[in-house]
Length: 248
Image 1 (cartoon, rainbow, N blue to C red):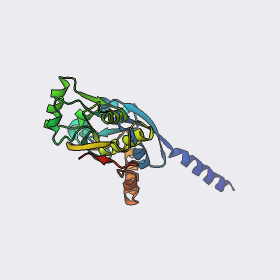
Image 2 (cartoon, one colour):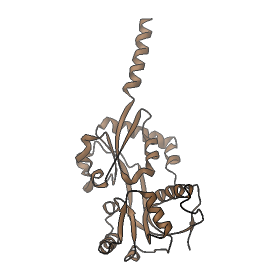
Image 3 (spheres, helix red, strand yellow):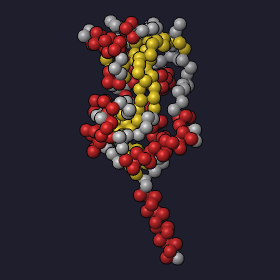
Image 4 (cartoon, helix red, strand yellow):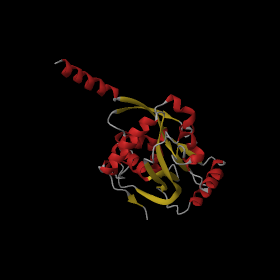
């Protein structure tokens, strides 16, 4: 009887020992990805979310003592991530996406076509690309007050739909999810045509940096299992409730 009681108590304590609360800091512009990211964490980890400006997120070595995990762009970029200091803390790449030019007015075939146009992009875009053509456009447009970055991606898509932005730069998943939200709220018509323009390289990689390498290892195991079981591909699938009608 005593042995059974001890075993029960051990199982009870073990449950709480592994029910970790993870203080997760993420960029303000990644709310659309949070359900995906949370679904990939081990079930034993409960997420307490904090939103930070991009310039702090992408210097994880300076704030890692304040959080358990940091979701950041360019997880494999050693120059920007100081990865040599964090190699035992960084996860493998979790999500990868490409950014596109969207517009309700016209199709922009080249990034340089955006010069002298009112352009909006997601917060942090200037930090995740070293593309020369893009940076030249930004420098040119900023001098004329024609380039802005926003953390609220729903506002970004709405500006495009209303024609207040000549073009926006955003990933396809983020665009579709925020477009769905605007349509459901009656702020955007489902049959509104949008022009899909040029890609803005490079591809963006996201992942996590953990303060405790053991938590990183637990996440990597959960991520691996999610891929083996097919869960990863289901939650990361790019889809929309409302089919997108493209302009010619």
